[in-house]
Amino acid sequence: MNATLDLLRTRRSVPPAQLSGPGPSPEELDLLLSAASRVPDHGKLAPWRFILIEGEGQARIGRVVAEAYRADHPEADDKRLALEAGRLGLAPLVIAVVSRAGPHVKIPDWEQVLSAGAASMTLIVAANALGFRTSWLTEWMAYDRRVLDALGLDPAERLAGFVHVGRAEQVPPDRPRPALAEIVTRY
Ligand SMILES: Cc1cc2nc3c(=O)[nH]c(=O)nc-3n(C[C@H](O)[C@H](O)[C@H](O)COP(=O)(O)O)c2cc1C
Image (cartoon, rainbow, N blue to C red; front, side, top):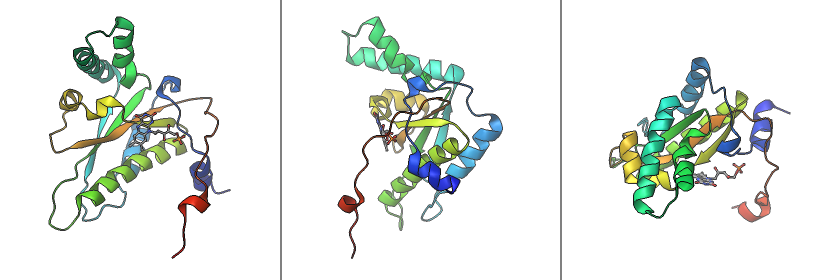
């Protein structure tokens, strides 16, 4: 079968805790980001951007995440705080995909948001094509203003998600997929 179709037909998310290093090389990273930034984009607005979170950056955002969690859950014990601090530090690389959708005279916000989704998915397909495994997650941090501020999102920007990238020998067994008969109609 064609390799692209094979990938699309079999791709599975792998939880960040199962993603190990090494992460993408600078050349591979360039490939991923170039692929992700040539998705359909009505109006050529580039309504997305990417934040690479690696190494010390993962530790730094982890401290912000844990502090935000502690402020909201004063009862949280050290184990829980360590878990929260580590969420963005499990895979060797996390790419935050930022939607920059905003008011435009012609292009609806919705279409700009969809383009950020396409960028996220293209990043995932490209990473898997290079032999990496991925997970596209938001969790509570993606909606937390303190975390978004630390990452440098302005108030008009939204996080499409964190794409965790790494290597994994094992891929989880497949999950049930929707039957085409239930989601496809003819007009
Ligand atoms: C925008 C977006 C956010 C997501 N956030 C989460 C999340 O926070 N937690 C989670 O368990 N799955 C989340 N998912 C789902 C996973 O990415 C993944 O699709 C799911 O685990 C099923 O695995 P699969 O990709 O192999 O089908 C999200 C998906 C999307 C599109």
